[in-house]
Image (cartoon, rainbow, N blue to C red; front, side, top):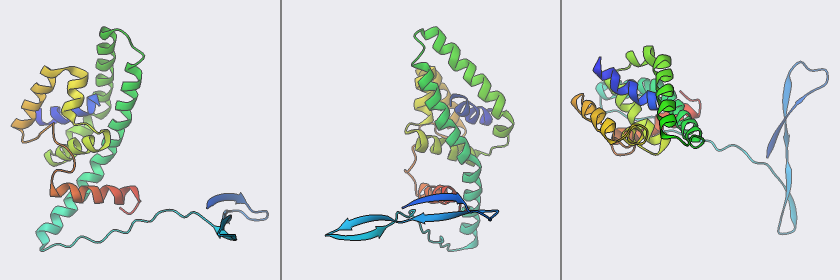
Length: 200
């Protein structure tokens, strides 16, 4: 039960394209507009195109490595949306806190947000594994630019952050974990970019 509390609290804080309807057609078609550009006196058509990333398929020495990678893909796909949500939520919290003058009211607001998030994510968090919680901690750092420990310290104080860091260490987790410090993070970054590109 305590292992869920760690993850639980982290969540608690936390060219141009022109679409035109063609007459007599039931579907909208894309019309590409070529914008003219002048280069050394010559007028040439120019069109901006989207950047395309190409990903190499990972190579594995054995089936065990392939299984570990598949498990990593599943775990990242599960927790990445939470990291994105936490990023937006932290931005909203910080923006709202700037409108509150009283420290008492700030604490009251943070408690309210914490309670709402715990209610919203309780079932999801209970089904997270240790590995998923560890990845989520790293992704919070990747998305927000600060570790889970730093956010706990910011919102709840040194003692509170220190307490939860101690609990996390007992369960082989680290709220101070930063993204990009291990070889696994290289794979996680590639997986995230593939998710963003809609490839997986």
